[in-house]
Length: 380
Image (cartoon, rainbow, N blue to C red; front, side, top):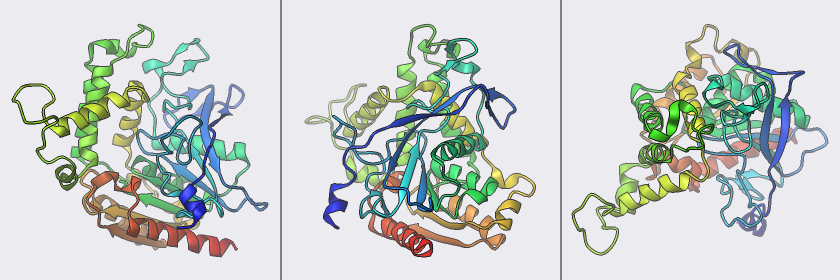
C-alpha cells in the first residue's frame, strides 16, 4: 500500500444541489410529482477535461453521501473509505467519484421529513411511495447538475446494487460499467418479511402518531431501534456472531434476568441506540418498501435497452451472506448472460455475511481493482 493509500482522502465536504424545482418538477414512476428535490453529495478526485473518468456511488439502505474521507471534527471515516481513495480499488488519483444521499433519505436529500413547499409543513406520510427508478432519476439529475453525461462505472452494494441494476436497464447510455455487490433483483418472501417486521416495529410505536410524529413533536425511537436491531442480525452470518460474541456475558458472569446479560444483546442495543441519532423512521419505511417492490426483470422488454447499448457488469456475492445470498446474484447473472451481455461474476469467501461488501477483504478488493484497472486502460 502506498503512503497516499494509507492516508486516504483526508477531510472532505458534503454539498447540496437542487436538481428539480417548480419549473422542472420530478415526476415519479407513480405519476406523483415532487416540486423540489435537493440532493446531498460529495465528490473525490478530479474530473478530467474529457469528463470521462467519473464514477457514481450508490449507497445501501442506511448509507449517505459520506462514502469516504473524514468530515471536520469527526473521527469516523466515510462508510466505504476502505474502497475509495488514493491508491485504493476505486482510486481517486485516477477517478472522479460522486456519492450522493438517496431520494427519500434523511441525510440532506429530500425525503418524507422534508418540508413540502406546497404546504410549508413536513411531508410525513403524504410523501409519495417511491420506485427504484425514482432513485435513478435523482442520480441522473445530479449528474446533469455536475455536467457529467456518462459514467465510466456506477457502483453499489445491497440496495445500492439494486439502483445500479435499475440504472443500467433503463438508461444504459449513462454508463460504461456496472458493479453490483451483494444485491438482489427480486426480494424473497423472507426478505420482505424481515422488512415488514421492521416497519411494524416503527408504526406500532406509540410515538408514531399515524406517521405525524414530526407535527406532534414526537419520535418513535423505540420502534426504530428495534427495527435496526433486527435488521442488523440479518447483516451478519452465524459464524460472525459466534466469533464476535459466542455466549459471552456482557459483564462478569451470566446472571439470569430480562435485561442485557449477553454480550450480543449489548451489541444490538448499542446498534439500535446509535441509529437513532442519524436516521429517520419515515425514511426507513419508504426505502424498505421500495426494495420490496423491486422486480425489474418481470417487465416486458426489460433488457431491450441494455442489449441495444451494452454495459459491462461485475457481479459479486459473499458465501455467508444469507440476506442476499449468492442465489440472488446468480439470478441477475442468468438474466444478463441470457441476453449475451458482458458479465463477470465472483463469489467471495468471507465469514462476515451481508456486511462483507463494506469490509476490506483481499479477494473482493482485488476483483474490484482489476475491473476498474481495465476500465482505466480503455479510457486511456
